[in-house]
Image (cartoon, rainbow, N blue to C red; front, top):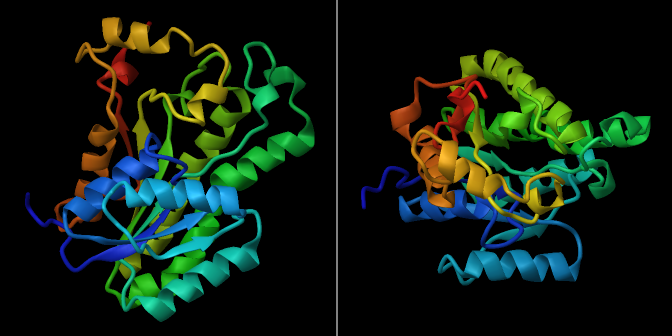
Length: 262
């Protein structure tokens, strides 16, 4: 396998288990020669779950730190700790989102309270800006790099049950474009991968997705569901020098579902 990322290193934020998109991205990045550092949600249980997933990639002693992304001081602390241990920062993978599970049900969008609406945008979208700000000094010193976040088609079209998460992901995609515009002068590229439906801890919280896998397999132009490795490969391309001319984009990796009119 070609070492597209040999000599590059960065942070992967958002691995929950071996099914998450962040895991598939990290697996592909490391297979192509990258060195990855990782964060986990606070708490021993979350650390154990993330560590087990990282170990499954063959990484026995990973750089792993707790992170509450709702606190700016913790974000700054993680990036400062990374800078002490790694000489360069070539990529940041943002694969986190949050919304209350009971709000992600069909017909429940109108019931979304103000606080929960703002919380979803804070964790799912504002954190991309916060990560970019914390990463900027070291990434600039490294000669540029790639910041990459995960979205879903529900940011553009109505997906029943996606609700406030769709609003948050739309904000995420717009945030990426503004960051791409400001950070491009330092050689930093900011892109979004809009992955197709994959059964994960996050997607299982969304009501109305019970038959989605079957429907996608029937209707998608490629007549199959997306696989984690599809997204991992796209992330590897974007983080490598092969993607050096791509920034501010939302790239769909969903077997073509997004092109369908109905």
